[in-house]
Image 1 (tube, rainbow, N blue to C red):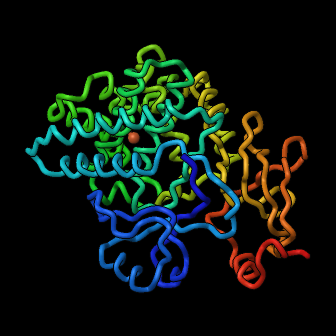
Image 2 (image 1 turned 90 degrees about the horizontal axis):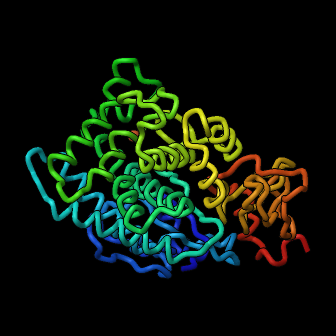
Image 3 (image 1 turned 60 degrees about the vertical axis):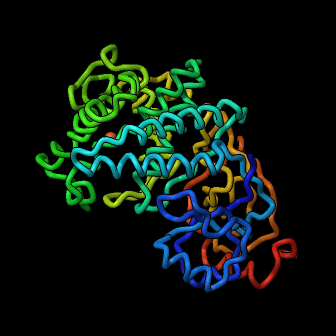
Length: 381
Ligand SMILES: [Fe+2]
């Protein structure tokens, strides 16, 4: 279940010569176009563009010594994406009822739960979503994975975890029915627009009830309740703590966590320190404190392989997340504050007085350029 360090990049001819880290599948199918491990050539890259593939995973040469632990197998994630895509496409076709798509989603939830139960990692790495193009699919699947991890920590039964996973995958299904100009609006929504946005909860719930009889009410309740908050400040009904189903509370925590870590059209992602502050602040008044605690004790706030800028300015990547002090992981330092490569060294930030200040989407150009000129093992010598 291990994978080599990799990063997600936009398809570009300049990637020729790099190695594909994850198999690329034809859109909406499970047919492989290029297998992982293939060295990319310009003709492969042209082929991907022709197939409408915008993003791929390439091996990150800067971290070629790092084996990243994978929580859910890549194949499972791909199957999940295809199943969810089929369901979402179905929502747009009024009157169409394809219950086999809902049944496929139930099967996916079983697979996700199996992968997570089989996995005894102390801390799980959850990929940060970097691309707006794939936000809805990836977010829905990540929320399902995070929710199942929280549920497992709270000793839910396998069947409860499966229902939780289904509800989590479908939690934002109603967004498909919200006008694009509101959904993708840059800047803040007007009160009227926000009222429309809020209806994704009821629209989604109604849709699933009418069309997908195979989805149990304990799953679909998550769709209508995932924006409810314990203090009654949520929507659509302003329910209080005891009125909100526990599976909905778990998905609320997973949703808030994952949404904060992603770039959105209307705002940049939050840095790990801000995510931690926001979760700690809301644990109790708005989110279930036990569930937030379960999340923070099982999901890495700064994942393995994240490129980080430390509070003393050094540039590093995370080799081992820290369970009790999420901003003080073990890192490998690769460059100084000016991005000049240094001889690499491992540093456990625990009690060092230095923390992760920010995360970067990619290596600074200066670091990559130096890496091309000198192999890393001799840098600094
Ligand atoms: Fe939502």
